[in-house]
Image: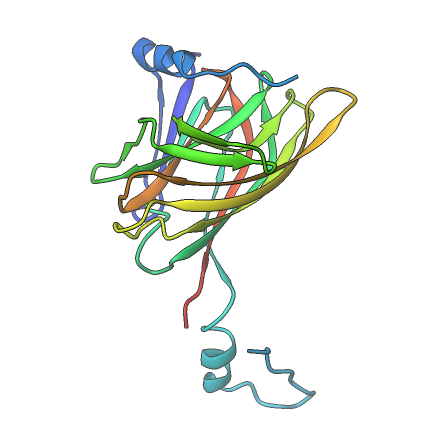
Amino acid sequence: MNPTELTVNVETGEVVQRELTAEEIAELENAKEIAPE
Amino acid sequence: MAVKTFTTGEVLTAADTNTYLNNGGWVYITSVDLGGNTAVNVDGCFSATYDTYQIVISNFRGASAGYLYIQTRSGSPASTDTGTNYVYVENLGGQNIDQVAFRWVYAYNTTDRGNAIVTVFEPFNSATGTAYNSAGQMRNSTTSFFYLLSAGQKETQSSDTGLRFTHSGGAVAMNGLITILGQRKA
């Protein structure tokens, strides 16, 4: 299963889970930082 | 205002609850399990009902070492502010400007958890940049432990209605519980 995004709307109670697109995964990878020692 | 103390047999009136319960304390808004997702959006948790919020992050863990990234969401439909609009200071160090997210807690791996409690100030106020103070504790190796004190704010003003949680390591599965409370206003 690909990485997923969960969206919860507190006002409506709607809960949506979907797989991230390749573009969205690339955005997350581009934003990552080096973990501290 | 001190909470009234009742004695055995004394009647609890509507006036008592209106005075001592309705006008004080933290009110539960929602709780969201990160549940192994790579990104979690919580929309509609900030509104005009409260000015100040408390966010409790418990048992945060990641599939790799890294911080929990926090970004604000606004608009309808809600979208995430991914710009370099986040500023924070950690452990009394120098300020980190032009960041793409806040970071409140860290986890070393899937079992060494991090926990934090965060106070968020006026996220829904369109005239202010969402601000916070946070305190967390976490491991940063199998043998060492650290404490993360952090404060920051958005450098842009917006009426934020939600938060987005991701991992500083990129597309990394996360676990843990996010609980959001609002401070009741008199």
